[in-house]
Length: 132
Image (cartoon, rainbow, N blue to C red; front, top):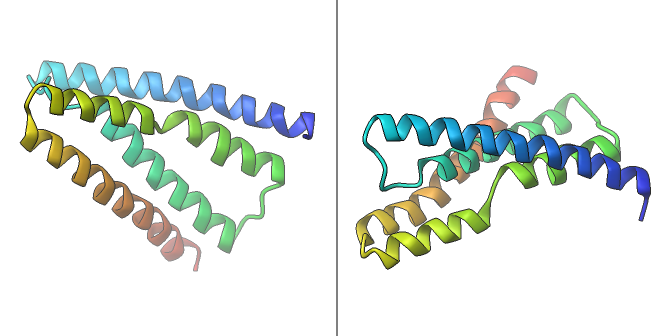
């Protein structure tokens, strides 16, 4: 394993983890102010934003930018890997089900997948328009 590549991933991971913490805290605070406390808005937000960013990076890389292996690993594996969170999504979904909030749980599960897919496609589409 290339030590320099590991440092790129570690740096990206640090940036992504801090970004996730800040984003989830801000969204959670806003949701609390609005009285929307029973739904995991913070987790949904970072996952949707991360999907949009990944779609954007993929399209930008295909059309206009050829990042080095280190930069690609830093952004995709490190930053976005730490920013998005399937484990927290799973925990949030479990607790919604455990509390008997089946409508919210269903909306969260299906909505997360569909909205993240749409955000990924939107990221690609936006940069395809801009760069083509």
